[in-house]
Image (cartoon, rainbow over all chains, first blue to last red; front, side, top):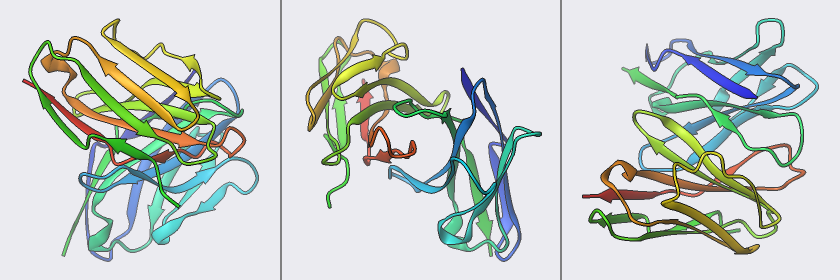
Length: 114
Length: 114
């Protein structure tokens, strides 16, 4: 079985500051890991994903995440926050096989102040 | 290309009424997922289909909920009878079985049961 824990339901940063959103996962099989973003009244959009290979994954809008198996973590970072980054972010995990569902964390709301 | 299309976008109904939510997945996708999003419980997987066949419905809350996928281009989620605690945003998502697990989400159906 898979599960995801996102540490911190709300993170606030200043514009230009580092963004760090934390995600830890539990999986009995090699995981696929994802970060999604949700803007108000919209569906979820994929930011980035890790399947196999390079453990540092780059996504859209300057975000990246690093898969650390020893720490069972997949934290999301961005060097410099923009006002437009304010949204809700979800970490998700699925089993390392086709045709399985994503299990999502509870989400982290990112606020960016000027 | 059109994304995942959900209807209605908003539904307000009274307790005891039947509610039907509809989803058209992305053409060519062969997996379809229904999720429910609430403030208290976050994103919960309700059910998912591979090649129109239900694979896991363990997330369906109770017998009042049912989902069908009569063909590759259409799915419904039905609640009968509806209750106020069913109020939530219901998301449909689709993916390719061999596509590395990425889900493509619709914009959601916001259900309010009075």
